[in-house]
Length: 370
Image (cartoon, rainbow, N blue to C red; front, side, top):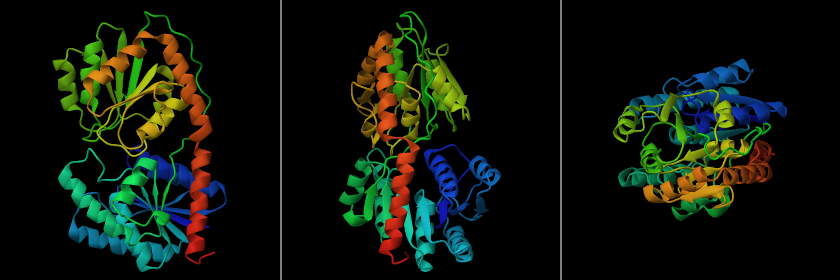
């Protein structure tokens, strides 16, 4: 099979970028020919090139809506796809998803769009929800199939009538397996290391986490925040809450596995999500997880068994759940072990990759290309 992946940017360690990286390498390892196209090259595209994956920058493919540039990007994609002649195209992220589908269908190439969380999901500002819903309904007309990364997102997509039910499939994200770190029962007076890995952007809700932890200052804890983006407002809030000596902002990190190994519990507090990979990484590292009940997050965390799911923006509820885990080292160890077992059963990368490849084959067969 000859497959081309299209994504808007490859200059950051986001869930979409990691998905492209891992699927491209896995498909190549299975003997398939892989090409990757994107605007904004960077750390992920450099890695793919180093690993021998064919990569091409599409210079005018940018995230903001810029009509003149967008027309050029569409033409550049059509020219490159006509040159590659892939059997199937897999598009990711909103902008590349639209342009990639239009270019592929113009050339009569089967095309799949993966929605890593709808841009019109709950938590997104209402005006943006309306605009993106209509954009995705338009994009659905040029999709041979759509993949959502959670059942929650599939339900949203079907309710919005993006495509008929038979053209939309939910496939949970998966993470490559690594051995779990050795976890030992902590002493009650040990410092509990909390980690959140998330970009500093409107989607993520660092503020609610900080305000909730401000209610737990009687406990012995330290918080690390890893992620790219503008964190100035978070620095100010940390000072305002008097948490300067308890919170560290690390910036974007390439050693997240190490940070998880050193942590004792993991939080992902957000306004909206698709199906967060960071939660799976934490489960893989045997950490208990606390996350917001947004998107498909609740599909990876079993309430009271592998961690806790709390309502969006619920400072008091989050503070109570944090207090429970901060107070009970044995519970942290028990939940972390349960999370690791759930990861092994449902969320390993191999499971996701095999389901995705099977879908590629189904789409090609439905399009008469097999």
